[in-house]
Image 1 (cartoon, rainbow, N blue to C red):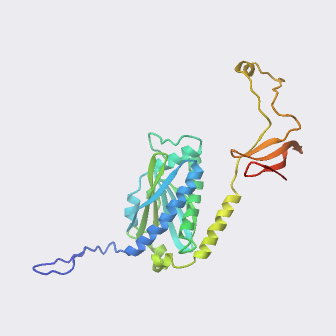
Image 2: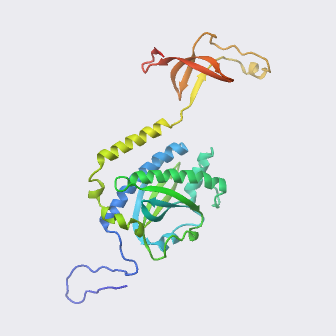
Image 3: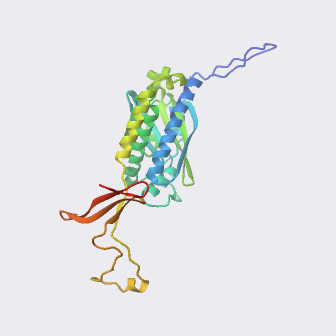
Length: 311
């Protein structure tokens, strides 16, 4: 540790401590640029998780700091969920860590539960790790999108770890940047940590400025996002239901039903059936069969105003 001390009547600039064992690798402007990039990532991550776990998810960047790799690893809990990922075209690997509380909330929601956390934190089972692998892979897609204005990053998950001490990516005193995101899911809150080595960012460190980030490529980026949005919409799944008719029966009649009984519906055999997409009535159809499977043939498309249109 080197320190200069102002003595006597000297009124020079303020003295600042400097540790030569921990040289600052990123300027304030570069750290601010990293914060802007990962604010975009936090929004993309929240949007993805909201749809995936069917609950409102909020995300925000709470800190962007540089430290040694050893300090970052020591700050993690054990057990925790650690994803080691590559960052093509950049060299080396980085880390994304999701704390246990947040991990169990996500798993519980995905497996049909309300989103509760076990009373005792434990290691993830193989099935739970498989579930979270998909979450991490999609999260890394959002991370690549957030970086795309600066570099066409293609993050790819390499492996999962539970114990931070088993993740020895760098020498202990190598410098890294740690981006911490606060993520909230159904009342539960946790910090998602992203650790990127300086040596990986060194080839593009000169581009880490707000001027470069917002300086160009907007038309290309806009087109890229439109194409990405179109691809996601085209592959979405929506529930489609066909109503054969309705009937009203008493509880007594319901309890007395047995094999071979017939329930009389309020529709005729020659009447069109209502087809709903989600909770909206979109089509009229007639029942039939395709091979050995039941099917319906669309006969009318319901207009937005509620009027019928012929197919």
